[in-house]
Length: 319
Picture 1 (cartoon, helix red, strand yellow):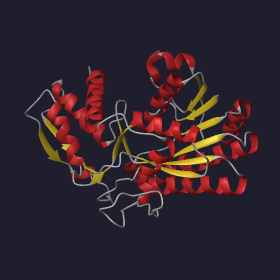
Picture 2 (spheres, helix red, strand yellow):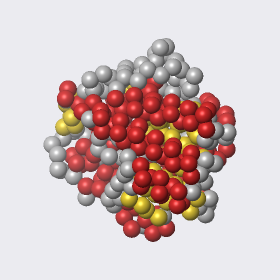
Picture 3 (cartoon, helix red, strand yellow):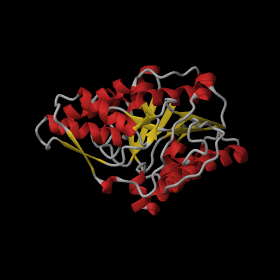
């Protein structure tokens, strides 16, 4: 099986590559703009072909896919920060929409039988109409930030390319993914990083936080990439799936868990209003029953496992 992963050097991409390598003998190619410390010389970086590609460069994308003719593409590459999207909406659209069009067009012209899974987001749903009910795939989407609008565009584009050209595409609306390796710009990883710095004596015993009141659905990235694999290989195309735990948790709960497993018991919490979003949805959590029923997927990691592993990651990183 020839597999292409866009955004392979990112948080989800590296976990997906590791999962696929353990699942079977695949020929994997990864594309990204910067490979940084991808796998730090480990098995992945030795056995996976890495190609530097800017997805907004149409000719470059077309040439790579024309040459490779992959059987499957996991399209993960994106500008994925909501806060950055408010500051840089044009850049967010350039990467998330125009780059994705180049992927879809290159598949249409050079390998129309290639199966594609597009990593979209639960941010597309916006505030749930019934705030006490989990969001399922039939709910309408009301994106409320530039990042969510860009991903909604990709969502619709995939559906259009399926209907117009018969491209075998899947749409994965991922809720909040957490786990080891995530950058500090995301809430759980940001909390864990600050705890690790405090434990090391490199930060005063005060954690600066944004809004702790919203409820979100947190899923371990290792469970998410398993879901992508199950969807890609077990179901018919033109399907939308929620990638989520199915449980709502207040953001403050994540901080409480991290503080409970910290080596310090004197950490204080300080609210920093500059960390608040311009528009912050009060509650988003998903219904994963379709994913479970149609693919047989189930999560392996508890929220405690995910946060503990994230803290261990940051402890090692700052040492």
